Image (tube, rainbow, N blue to C red; front, side, top):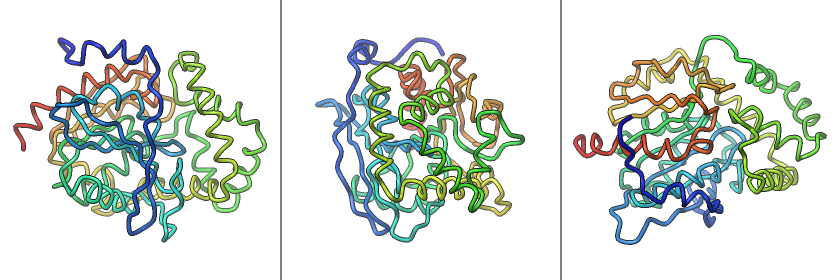
Length: 314
């Protein structure tokens, strides 16, 4: 990267921790989706954008990045089915492709079918890829932060995930997990997702604990997590023309891949892939699995480098 092209006030903006954006709901054919909208700066040439979180996350995972991009995007972050404040999907299908179809319905309803800038983190990256495959005409740019895509081998941080997905055993393990204090569970998530867990502000940790406690009271939370995980892992075994890396080869919009060098869940070796035809890569040495939370200023700056390319393609 050369010079920064983010707003001068970016660091000041994040000095006062942005609060979660207002939440509303949109009804789509397969259920109801909770969304959080960051209104664009007045008189800005803002374009629609969709932000998709990862497994076990929520729309609030994008709070800071959305704040930084308000001069360029009219941002909407979605709680995926069964996550955050969104109830389960009507048909019970948590697969990335079915979820992507619901997000197509969301974009059609919220933005009148205008093309959007799509951001996806972890499992949200897998959903974002399916979104592009379903409706390439609806995507201006694609930004994937540590996308959950098939890889060789198992990392220490994700070795437990296939076990949780095992029928019967996974449910028993999840119930045992719920016996752990909410504060310890929130800390465990931060420990595996962040390069430097100590950098998480106390207010953000309090919010995370409160969210864990709220989710504990939802009867479908465990099923949503396990079913979403199973749907994701099924894409790892897919050998058809709809397998993730095959879909990547067909992506025509400008694409950016963001990886954390200290990611415990997704190996940054994928940063060297040439699967995407029009791709730019950013590897952040001091970030983990959620670079958009840990290093939002750098991610925002990098995304702005995609815009001239998107304008030429349009």
